[in-house]
Length: 629
Ligand code: ADP
Ligand code: MG
Image (cartoon, rainbow, N blue to C red; front, side):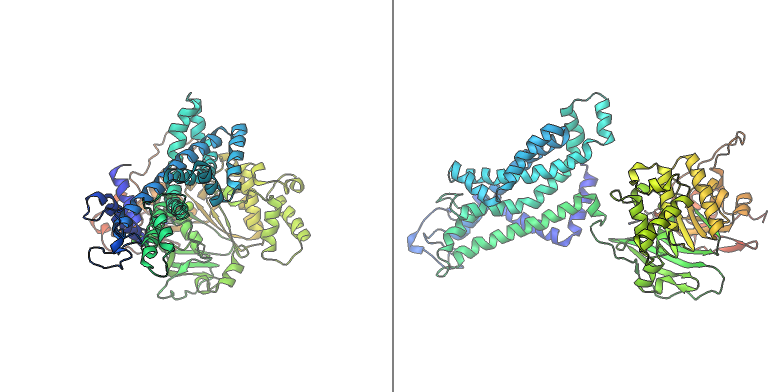
């Protein structure tokens, strides 16, 4: 890990206050016990019967003494040292052996896996502490034997955990590629598998080490771990227990220490897990609310129009820690009944976020709608209650997503999923829903729908799955379908079929369609009007034909120049130089200015409003190309 990565991981760790607290407490404890030989304290085993059971804060004995007159502070420090060493060693042994077993079982699979894992299962079948007791009983009491016992009973936990992760990556393409390049199994394990499971191992250690310290203390408490006069926290607690009434400090002192250590280790462990696991880091475990959080100061005035859907000044932000990503930074859109509106823009320009914001589907946290309104038939969807919104989702407005394999449930047949989609909004019997589902599959031109309805998503081709996606979107006869790059995952011929299908369905049913894409070729084929999006704002909008013929915004021109024309001669295809700006650090003025060849000084100042261009178009640019309009 380089310095930068280490720094960012540490920053992440300390952003979690509790983990930072755990780290600080644990560091103090570790520093003190490491320095034990240098500290001016008594010898931990030095008995002095004349001074037995002194209370804490007596002269010379800060924490008092035990029943043999030994200094409790000194025993506490040395005992903690021993407990930590034993607990941590046990976790490392358990992790190393368990991970090895898990990787071998997961990687080789088949009989090896079966044999190993059944052995592990047998170990797991015994109650945990009973197994540890049995092992110590066989090996004989003693701290080292307690260490072995604790390590052994924890091996199955690591083995199971790591096997699961290994199975998940053993058949991935990069492992196949390594095999194809002629690497041997052990080399693949070392260079391909191990680096991928290492974070999981670290996470597993960090979350179990506290538990292991506790188990070692448990064995010592029962007299099976450290033997007198040697002290560890467990044995101190065991000795103190007998004097609980007369001299409570003798057991409270080690008890508090065990609590402090285990608590700080666990807090730190959770923090390490959150910092290392990229999924947790992005807040995957934070269950998003059913509706995006809305935090608007005012609702924009209603504009009288006959639009079916009217979006005004929509601001959707992602608030991640200190950063604010302005994914949609003031989007205005209008969709008329039966119209197809294209939204086009580079990847990351905020198209999906805009589309999801319309029905409050952006995950919150971190998403929040800061301003704007979304009016369906004049009624603001962002002001309605959840039930109303839910009844609109999928019935009046429905979605088609980019990757149908990711949106269809892998374990249900497409029939079941379609029936579910229908019955979610209509009180019909299963049988009626089934008939309707078959009709829908027919509508989207799936051959032999009666047989196909029982198929699972993985049994269909990409194009077919997308047809199922479309059929599901049509299930409740919506007025608007929002299609978010529905053909990007498909090859060109299938893409053409799907586009033709959408176009037909739209005309038959008088559907409004919001079609999101990054391809002007697709827009030209399907859309009546097009809105060009850049860095969270619509920069140009107007009828497709006019915009294609005479783009006004420099960005639109560049986008159109990116589309190759088949048989169109030897035109030079120009890529747009540079990258879109990061939406958490948008420049002043026009966000496209840094990449624009028409940009002048005034483009980099203030905020830019849209200006009308011609009768039906508008553009957000100070120096648009307007000659032809
Ligand atoms: P696209 O136009 O490709 O559909 P998106 O709408 O998915 O783009 O994303 C727009 C912007 O929002 C991107 O710059 C992305 O970095 C940001 N974004 C999306 N989701 C999140 C999130 N969960 N946290 C932070 N930023 C996000
Ligand atoms: Mg997208």
